[in-house]
Length: 148
Image (cartoon, rainbow, N blue to C red; front, side, top):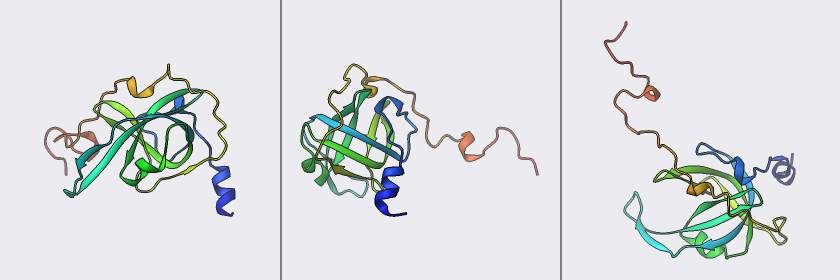
């Protein structure tokens, strides 16, 4: 199967179907607005730039986190196809991300005529799973004594 056939066979997800656990997200969205660029320090103490872009389709909208060079590659009113993106929670709110393994491409013609801004998934608050829980089920710990 060629790359083109493979990308066409990937199912495109509508924004309203995104959840905090969405992975391998393939979607087409229109960029409505971009926030001011913020300078932050990365995990490796490097200087990074980050901006939030409000993107959506006819079913809803969500904030897309743009990093470094990607900030300048996408302008307002542009329509992009995101391949292999993911969703995470930032301060309890959903954010769509392109990430290291994802990609995007600008589309010449937009299949999106109107964006539903009433259904902003990033406005909803979600409980974040606690990390590094000493007795977390994710790590296979059990309360009480060990059984051998």
